[in-house]
Image 1: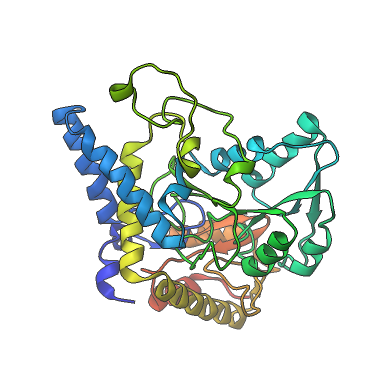
Image 2: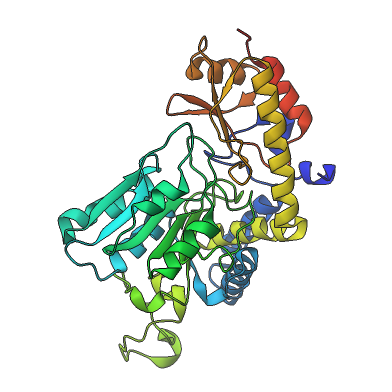
Length: 377
C-alpha cells in the first residue's frame, strides 16, 4: 500500500493500532473536514447552511458509489442500532412470522428482532457458530414459509468470520425473504456490491472500518423493499418539500427511498467526516483495499500459528476478513491485550479471544512488531 496513505493517520506516530473493529482513529482528511465545518459554524452560524445541504447530497452519492447503490437508497442515521431498528419496526409483522439470524451476532443486530416477540409474536431462529464459522447451508436450512427476514453480520465481530452474502442473498431473494446485513465490521475494509450480493438493507456506523466518527451511520434500503417498510419515527425531514418554501401544508408525502427515515436534523459534522473518509476509499479503490487486507490477514494468521497461537477465524477462501481472533492455552486474552498495550500495540478482546483488526494503512512491519511482542508457549 502507498506509504503516503499511512502519513494521513497520526495514530501511527504513537501506536501500532490494530483495533479498527472497536473504534478507529481518524485520518487528517477526516479531521480537517470536521474542523473546517466547526470553524465555519463558530464564525458564521448557519449563514452557510446551503453548503451543508450540498454536502449531504455529495456524501450520499459517494456512499452509494461505494456499494453500487442509488443515492436515494442511502440514509444517514445515528448508529447501527438505530438503522437496524428502523427496518425491524417498519415491517408489517404477523403472529407466527420468524427472523433467522445466528447466536454470535453483536447485540445491535439481535435486540431489535427480539423485541418483535413480545410486540407481534415473531420468533427468532439462530444458527450456531461452530469452530469460528456460521455454516451458510445450516443457516439457510432454518428458513421456512414463515420466515420474513434474515438478519446477519457480514463480518462477525468476535471471530472475523465473513459470510457469503451473495449465496445467502440470492437464496432469500428467490423466496421473497428480506436480507438485512450488519455491515459495520466490513464496510471500508471489504468490497460490497449490494446488487451482486442481493442485499436488501444494510447498516454500518462510521466509527469502525469506515474510518469516520461515532454517531453517524449509513442505512441502505433497496428500492425493491422500500414499499414493504414504513417509517415509525417521523419528523419534518421525512417528507417531500421544504418548510421554508411550501409553508405548513402538513402533507405526509414521504421523501424518496431511504431518506424518509431521516426524521430530523442530521449530524452535520459527522457527515462531513464520513464524506472525507468515503472519498479516500473511492480514491484508493475498494477492491485494492480488500486484496491488501486479506493478504495482511493471511500473513498475520501464519505468524500467529508459528508462535503457537490458535487462530479461531476461518481461513477458508471467501470467509477471511480483515478481522482475526486467536487464543492461547497459556495466556488469557485480557493479559495479552494489556501486555501489548504496554508496547503501544492496540488490540481488543471479545468472547474469550484476542482480536486483531488492522486497516489498509497498517503494514507487515506493524504485524511483525505485534508478533514479536507476543509471549510464546
